[in-house]
Every structure is written in structure tokens, then in C-alpha cells.
Length: 519
Image (cartoon, rainbow, N blue to C red; front, side, top):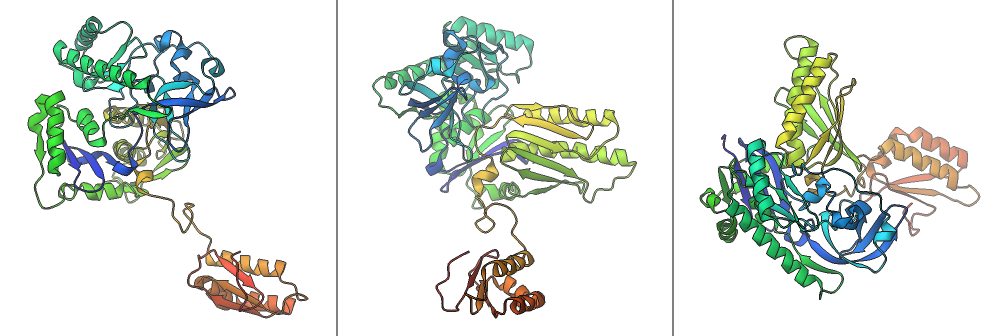
């Protein structure tokens, strides 16, 4: 299977979308209607706290946690409504698969403004969610509104025209820019998306008209709306993916639910009719993700270890602040010199790393530990291959040079939780640590507890209640230490196995029938 396919699994309680490139899973998105993300939504909110020390404010937008608004995300911080300054993240904040390789416009930072001079507590403002709540952090919002269409991203708060970096032809870039400059109002801005390449002025004008009317409708709702309130909800996952992923490189889009199939066809007929014949209803009995092997690939997303075809493997650890990726030789021994073997494995790892970043949606700070290469030429080759492999990634990344220790520091734009974090929760048994104390460690903790708390003048006997494995250690493996403690304290120690106890849990009581409290 060599074609690129967009698979949409919508028949169940959750909606899943997978992009296969040459038969390999490269992007996956999951949305549960009851847990739908906020990114891209526009709210009328109220400033509830201004923090001069952080140059930020918290805004109540009607969700559990107040949203975070940094001074750089306040349009007035740039002067004249933000027209002179555009950050890349403001050009695309829908939080899902959109065209992140945008904006070639001005990058001069705004002149310094203080948050307390721009906002005050109780002030009502219109904001857009740029990042969903991640972990313990609340949503991040911006006053730079952006409304993505099929060919354009409309930015009513700035006056600027940017073009997707994926459009490489200088002639086409000039044509698109000139066309848009003729059509647009001077007071608003646009980003020309990759999908606009080769499109006529009429198509761009249609997109502009639709987005302008959408913004006018949002403004009309804003004045009478109470605070906080939702003014505009972004498209759901399925329509977002159709809008942003269905392009000339995708040969077909398969949908397994008849209702969603008709809904998608109506959407495409209205906004992207030339792709209508690529949408097909999947009718086989076998589930769509099983048929294309995608279900198995999604299971691998949760694996810490990812095997390479050569026998090497990656170890991916996602921490709170960063993700560490370690490249290992595993079973790969090569055929020539050690340097050649290591370089080949690192090059293979690069391609898999680029895929894993997209599939798992890993963002933030990423550290890649390649196997040490002595030659600078080889290190540079691996680095250039990594940069090239990331070009197909829709999320913006910034890759630092490879160090002499073969470490690469990079960042990847993060607007929503990684797939692994979305599909899992901390282990209830180890409390998310990833490890538990050994029976031996717990055994010695119990003996120290008895020595510290149990005094001969107050205790007649000691009853220990613990996990069966710990009980075995106390009664058999470490029986000598228990006996010595009994002789030292002149108190008998009775060990009892409790099958309902956590391995690290134990209780020490004076009497067998005494009401026991967890320690």
C-alpha cells in the first residue's frame, strides 16, 4: 500500500482520525464529544487578576480554571492594534492539524508595555484559546483572533499578509500576495495557507467573504453577551481534519459512519468541491482501523520502547517539562566499522523519531540522545536528515545544532495534550511514579517503625499487617532480624498477611482485635 489515505472512525463513542502516508501511520487525532478541546474557541471573558510580576493576567472564560493571558498576547501591547507585530503562534491557534509553517512577515518584537496599563480587573475582553489546558495548567488565550478557512487564515486584529512556507515557488508566492493585497481591507490581515497554492482569485475572495461574515457575526454576538460566554466554537475534529488534511497528496478519505459521511460530503461540496470524489464510505465488516493496521500502530503509541527495523530501538520518556528520546543499538551490529554502524543506526532513528513526534503529538522541549559519533561530518549528516524529516510536520519546530556529545535540543509547538497523556492516567498503584518500593525495603521500614514506636513498658505484643510478599520476607527471609528485635524489646511480634493491602502499605498494632488505622 503506497497511497496516502485519511481514515475517519466515527461509528463509536469517540471520533478518531488517522493519516496514513505510504501506508504508515504518521498522524492520529482523537476527540471525545464530552471532552472536546477548547483550542480555537472564542470567548467573551472577564479579567479576574492582573499580575505585574509575571506580566500576565488571568481571565475567566467560564471553564474550571481561569485562562492565562500574557502581555505579548494582548493586541494593544504592539501598538495600533497589533498591526506591527505577529507571533507565529497567533497565526494558527486552532489546536489541531493545521498549517503551522506560516508567516513570513515582520518579526520585530513589540515595544515594551506593562500589563497593568493594558488591562484591569473586571475588564471584559474577547479572547481566543490558543492552547488547551495541559496537565495542571489552565488554557492559554490571546486577543489576536484568527479564523482559519480552507485557503486563508483571517486575522481581524492585525494588518499583515503572510504566506505558508510550504509554498516554495517565488512566482506563486508573489501572485498570491498580490492577489490578496488587491482583495483585502488595509485594516485586517491574512495568512495564505498551503491549500491556496494554484487557487484562483475567485476562490480566495469566496474564502475572504465567508471569514469576514463569520467575524461580523462573532462581533454582533459579543456586545449583548453576558460574561463569561462562548461566542464561537471551532469546527469539531472530523471537519477540522477534512479541512486541513485533505489535499492533493491524499488520494482518498474513508469514513465508516453514514451520517458523518453525508455531513463531510456537504462540507466538502460547500468549501472544497474538487475533493468530493475522494470521500468514500467504508462498508466492510472489519473495523476500519483494524483493516488498515492502524489499531496496532495506535497501541504502539503507548509503548516506551520503539523498535527499529535494523534491531536498534528508541526509548521515549515524557516528563513534566520535557521529552527525552534515547537511541540504542539493541541487536544491530552492522557490517563495517563502528562509526559506520552507529551513523547508519542514527540515520534510521531520525526518520522514526520524526514519525513518533507527529503520531504521539509530543511538544515542548525535546532532547534527543543519539549514539556518539566521532566524526563531525557524520554528526552534521544526522542533524540535516533530522531537519529534513521534520519538514513534513505541520507543527512548527526549532532544532538546535547537534553537540559533540551527540545531543540535540529542539522544541515542537504544543497546543494540546500528547496522545499518550490523553489516552492514559497515572497508575493508581504506583501513583504515577513508575516504580514501587521492593518487599525488602518495606520489610526494613516496618522493623525500624517497631524499633521507634513500640516500647516494652507500653506494649504487650506487636501485630504487623502487611502485603503477603512483605509478610513472607518478615516471617522467612528476614526472620533472624525479627527474632533479634523481639529479644531486644522483649515483645512478641506477630506478622499477618493482608491480601487487600498495597505492597507499600502496612499497619502496626498493639492488639490483634484493635481497630487498625493506615500508617
